[in-house]
Amino acid sequence: MADRALARIVPVLPVKDLVRSMDFYRRLGFSAHSWQGGDNYGFLTRDGLEIHLTQSEVIIQNQNPCGVYVYLADNSAAALETEFLAAGISLAERLAPREWNMNEFALRDPDGNQLVFGEGL
Image (cartoon, rainbow, N blue to C red):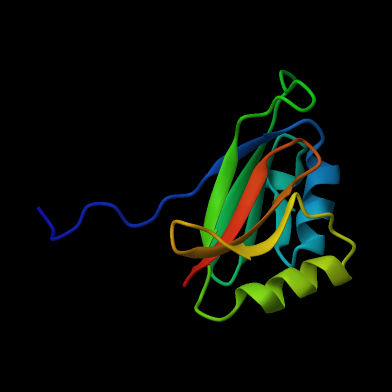
């Protein structure tokens, strides 16, 4: 067996409206496209990282438990938060140092998926 078996992990987030969600993530700087031009599955990429979206009819407003933690390059959190605010993105939590030695901010997409962006302190 090779030294490592796992190559990468890609989170898949449920969304009600794939087009609306891809537009939101484009405002976060991701490139976005749907699988074979359809409206059921989408691919997001930024800085060589991926998030996938899948259309789901079972999302209950304000009760979506899904999320992604994005580890940031050192000293990039403040600039990324500023970028998102300039794009009109509402933040659930502003950038602040946390007791677990991370500097973090958080937001939710239109379907309630939580994205937390953090860098080490």
